[in-house]
Amino acid sequence: MELLTNLILSFVHLFLVATDILFFLLVVRMLSYRWQTRWLTAFNSMGNPAVEWFAGYIKRALCHFSKKAFSEKVVLFIGMLTISLVRFFVAALLGR
Image (cartoon, rainbow, N blue to C red):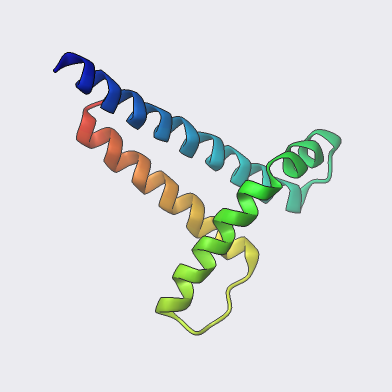
């Protein structure tokens, strides 16, 4: 039983690490709108596929609630807010 518990907690930890990385990439994309530095451009191009996938997913979800077209900055902000809330609730459930 201990092995199954550790396996489940390891998958939850992996999920939290993945959400942290995605949050970092979203912050880099938001900062690259304001400042155009070499390292921000490098991180932005590295994380572009993941951010585009997540932003498309958030846009599709927002289309169910509103017919209004949102800008990419608003979509990224809503994505960052969503990741923060999910991370908060998962951490609160596990007590970590």
